[in-house]
Length: 345
Image (cartoon, rainbow, N blue to C red; front, side):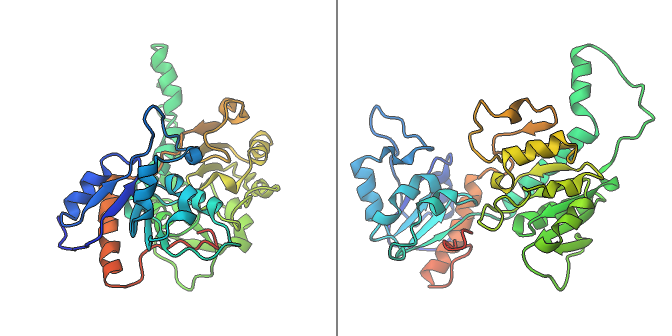
């Protein structure tokens, strides 16, 4: 449904999210949006190397903009040359390019940066986690091999595979996304432990046990599956390294990582797999992305890899969220989901 919000300034859009501007125009027909050209003629703009440079006209348009909607990796190189900006709305949750570009020794940025997250990401990541679990527990890869061999193997038809209702999940990170993952697992009958940074006086009905990071090893030891949804911050980097995953050894838990790859190094993860502390790993996020072709993770039989697709930005969701935040901006109310550049979150 179109909003009646009116905003006189032109909003700059620098993003590779397909059809984002058209969705923005649908929900905010009275607002003018300007797409910022990404590449010079004959030059393909590289999203992994945004320092390649914008065309001069595009950079000038950015520098004249008060409000900008941007992919973080595209706007990060220009953080300190946006004199008229007052607000930058991101198009996804993780803002690592912004944190890398941020320089605490320089004067504070004259604008606020807000990230995009919410119900859409939570729903998608919950679907991903359930799919990963069912794929393993119901032996889909094995039956695909049987199909290739034209072999009907129902010898184990009376041997019950583990159901989600038989399993215990430890969810690392109970924010908007982690809560949704936990609630879906609970709805399917699972026992759910949650781990977070802060104490909680009350628990939602879908979390049966809760521990702060001080109780991480206990929560890991209880799990059949460890689901990481924690963001990448200085406080979470290497959290599952240094032998911590040995706590998973008794149940040989499977790690499902949809948070950030920085939570465990490749070396520590491989050690946990090869020593039998982990029964496997489903990795949508990696310590280095794109994952180098030389990485041993590619050939590790206990590992399944997807290329950071557990939660994908949908243009209609970004447009709806921007509409809500724009109304708050116009009313001079605090914006939703502001980045804390010092805490890197």
